[in-house]
Image (cartoon, rainbow, N blue to C red):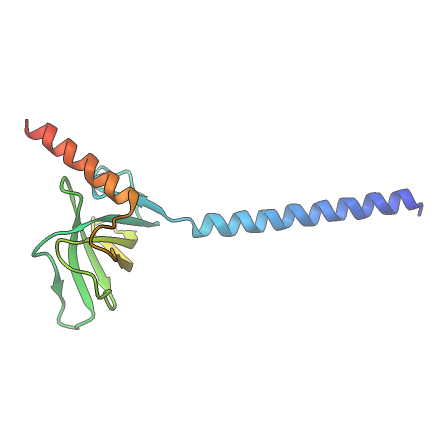
Length: 148
């Protein structure tokens, strides 16, 4: 085999390996991609049923209920316009409280119940994820406009 053919095969093999590696990276990225939705978007059907995504908003006051098993917690996340019922099985963060911001990750059931696999509580009184702050602001504007 000529040296030129060997080089072409080597370059071709290298390109094939790079393409395969890029495909694996993109595949892994696609599987781990988690989108953020507001309670209003979920209520409007814009969130995927059965797929993992995040919902952020405020924990509605008076909505936290603990099941008899001591592990399952049910609460409601709101953006002041719409509410989403959430169930979570596990330990809640110390900063998780009614009337405070939270982001939950999980799946939406066909019954409209959000089954969280992870609960994140805001860590500072003044901090809120930009997406959640924007969503709350938009929902508040919409609610104000509808009431007038």
